[in-house]
Length: 271
Image (cartoon, rainbow, N blue to C red; front, top):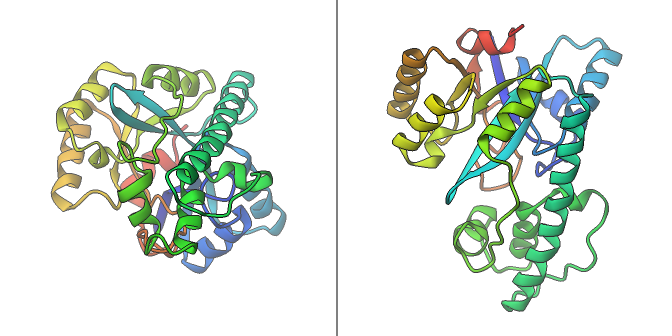
């Protein structure tokens, strides 16, 4: 039995719709998934409705990914099992999406001023939710970079010429928001922080419920390190592919990176 609790759709910066994600999950014989779009719950709601209407045997966990900031570190937090209709959660995420849309427009303008002619005019509709991956795809399409990852490494990543920081919550604000909505808060992809002391500090000082042990950014030794830390602190353990569907970013196919259902059963069946 396999699961994947970290998936993005077209409601944030993924390239597949919620219905397409469900279809791929079924084809990959996944037993449980969570759609964790950035600052958005519409994708998971659409997927849940699609599964119910078609009587598909696929467990889907309510999820979201919230971006927070600690000094120069971007700290991502995964939320699960919360009430999607919680008024404060909906208000805060709506404001975060507006800030994301403005940032996208500003990044496009900055990239153009740097001399990259990507032919992007007014941004509207679904494109507003794409963020930097949308700009990266346009840069690849125009021939400036080989793939999305290269565009991030050389131009759009933190500290690079085309980067613009995004207004974010603090970890405490994000965790409090999720808890108030009845959910749990999981520290996402700790290996990407590349700072064990910071991870340990976050998990001991903030009210995290768990840690994402299994993620493409973590090698086997890192997984063991996070497992040990979770056991030491009495935390839940989770995992997911962080699937977006972009070419050049692993995994390119949903189902290529999965976690054993029983390994993360306590998160999947949390109540």
